[in-house]
Length: 363
Image (cartoon, rainbow, N blue to C red):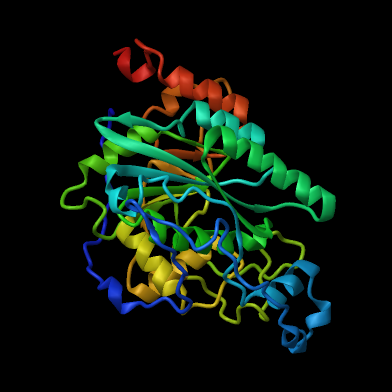
């Protein structure tokens, strides 16, 4: 792969049985090796608005999105609309999946999903191991609009069988909820996958490089801690109400965040994913999903680590005379954020062209 990409990862062991789930899932009868829910769609009582949230200081002055978050911050369980319980071959056979791609996507982002299925997120065997793909989604709109979008995803699901959807509003402040719901699903259906890529649907991921990197790890087949990406540390909540990432003191009083990796994309082991899920049951939901992952890691005594190959802030090109999408700059990366579908499609195919010559090869 050219230059060697180096990362530090921790081998700290945690007894997964120490962290118990507060709300146990309901399971139905066995069907071969696959455990299925009691009903086709997991049913939970509709989560009720917490009216006491309105009593917090200066509640009426908060932006609507913050008010909504506080009203429903306690909600963790929602009905599943689309499910693929056997995606990993069943819980008992999920160890056959080496890398599970978990891609956050809204119903309207069909063009992005089309591009990903044809490029880096294509399900395939690489270097003798299997890569599998999942898109995770909520719902959009209300009334007839919501029904149309749900039907749209249902039709897409019939063709590709790669979408998990829950009945909650797919908003920026609900990304943390989306992560928790997926991890709950993973614990039930894919508990033995080796590694996961968790990322957005507008990133370019060199999944071939990811497999090569993960296979190079010594003494870690996914059973030990690993959480790598674009490390962010020594920062805290943004207190500017107009900012997308605005977090008022009513949501978090502390002025600091624990270290975390940018939510555009990061790699983690199954061990770490399950630790995060189980520890999350005792941590209040935070509206910024990547920050929340950092909170869970910190409480578990684990650390996220930086990897030079993950560039969620984009790649710096040293000259305006050079094409920003020259594939030579992307040969050794793991992930870059952000890409339009057409650029992503072109980059993937240019990187996979035979006999490609770059400046480093011309010496």
